[in-house]
Image 1 (cartoon, rainbow, N blue to C red):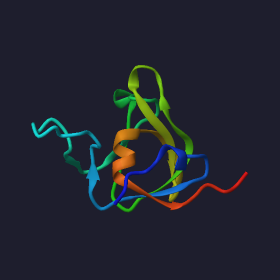
Image 2: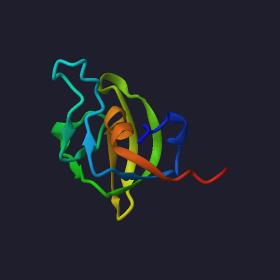
Image 3: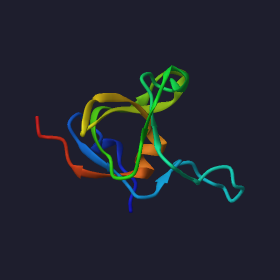
Length: 110
């Protein structure tokens, strides 16, 4: 499955989290990355793990609210909301999202 592209991550695009959730980091053959995870971490602020978080599991549909970009010290993240629970929105690390989700519906044309 090819990785998501930044150009696809525009407001209104719908994604689905894949059965295997990856950390999106290269492994370099040294067990430093390239692993799998139980869930994607959704935080209220970019990189805001200590401010609370929500666990996004396999099969969850997400709507892109803001495409991936560098957000201060937290690195690249995208703002999304859970389609089935629209009140649940926040930030997901781009490296994890691009390796762990597929595009279901492109964003509507402006």
